[in-house]
Length: 364
Image 1: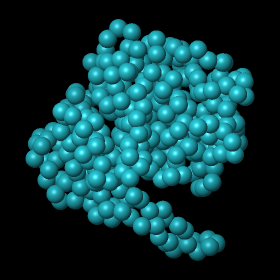
Image 2: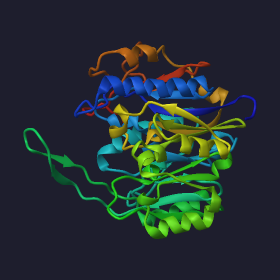
Image 3: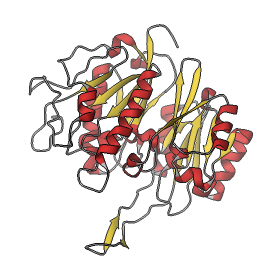
Image 4: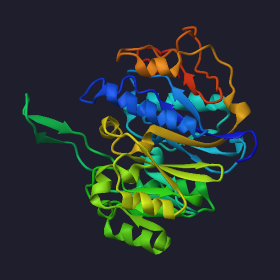
């Protein structure tokens, strides 16, 4: 990596993780902290979004957009960060990310609202081509459960919009786009079926049962022996949702603890160092994809990371604090201050913003 550039990742403080549901928040925050510290110790810069109770999906930043070109060592003004189009309820999260990244100098754009694409969960580079994962919708439904009431609601999923393909092709041209069909009525997105990793992201972890036959055939035809198939046991542990790292000349793959030695060995044979991270309490809220927790922002110039800001609450203190409702303003910041951050070597960046009217989101 060029002198003065550092790989950066956007992460969301999981303070409100499971605030409305069944997640083990204390354990989830410990697991999140382990991932954050792993990235920091490997030399990456971490930008951490302050928590907002109204927008817990900020803890899954990789579903909120994607950067292109991702790995090129170019000024941020020559790259595009494309905001995801997801449920209307997540518009506040998108607005927050737009304002935040614009401060760093990213060129932030949005897709037409007709196109549903959940960032890197649906669209990501795999060697020269990009993969656009498409699948059938799964409607919401009720299933029998013990307790009162004797059922629970399983939310549905909306797949990426096939109509978005021409727009995405134009964004990444001249690189090709592969339309990969997921298995019909499958709960999950492309990042729980596929993972590009290794030098140049040229190798692909594939869970065959998560793909439609034509999608699997396409990948085998394009990637040949660079396809590494995941068995059902490793898929259940979240192996396809691993986080690929390219730090200088080194390639690594952060996988959930418990994946098989066979899979770890195949990853190593293809030029990537397998690393393990705990991913049990986080798995449900993250949809089974560890990489949703860290949005890869590619190489960023050090001077872009060093943005002056009011002093922020230390991450360690935030990670250990009891679960509670916090304002969106970083500790010590004036209540009317806009989101800002300071990057320090070996530390995360704490971001905060003044709550907007009623919703607690950034003012539009």
